[in-house]
Image (cartoon, rainbow over all chains, first blue to last red; front, side, top):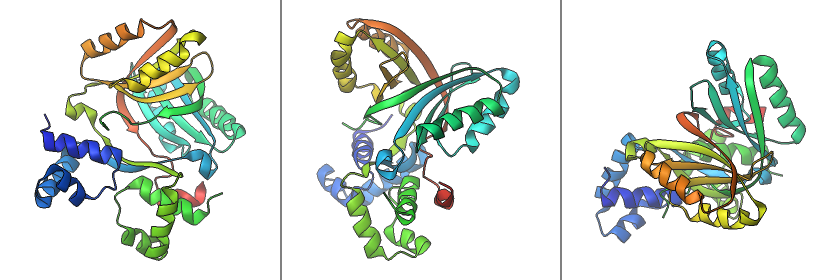
Length: 146
Length: 152
């Protein structure tokens, strides 16, 4: 389990990963070198990636959708590999019985999303595909930020 | 619209938001001062937040679920407020096609999942689908590979 210092640092970085470690150390009243040691430990054990959440609409990608895809065991590897080649997919989760996926797609236009869906269907054997267009992203990655 | 150069700098930040600006400058041949100014501008709206993705399982949160919810229209706002304030709810999307919200929940165990489901009982939930996330195959991969920027 994490100690209080680790929890504080994780939460601070979840809120702003470019935060100054020296400033965080001051709020914790602990030496900067100690906090850097804590950071390096967390980077080895718990931190997957530092990233920047961007407003996709502002860079010309206003169409976002969550897609649930299901296939059979026989065609699962093919679908897994295919999804990994699609640059439009921001997130790919393998769900439930290992032959289902929940993916998040980001596209410039509705037509581009439609083409993506057509190509996924043409190149794979799916038993189900459900598409949910995102109307609003209300919150993202909020857990352990407060 | 943003330029290809903007997308390139953003891709470095998407790949590693703690990246040193000098490193971006070396890779892109854009002066550090220009990158500094651009990031300052991005932070006024284009970048919503710089954050860190963590392995919740290693922190004892062993269950990650995607949950689709449809609720009676009159309960939509109260459900939204409930979800926004709930500790275990990591992400919330308002969606179409038969559901109102898709959420991502992070829980320590099945008891926490059950408690969450019980709490949803106070709203007029018309339909709910749950999917347990077994593996994060890719997370935040969009515009996170500088070498791919010319292709987008």
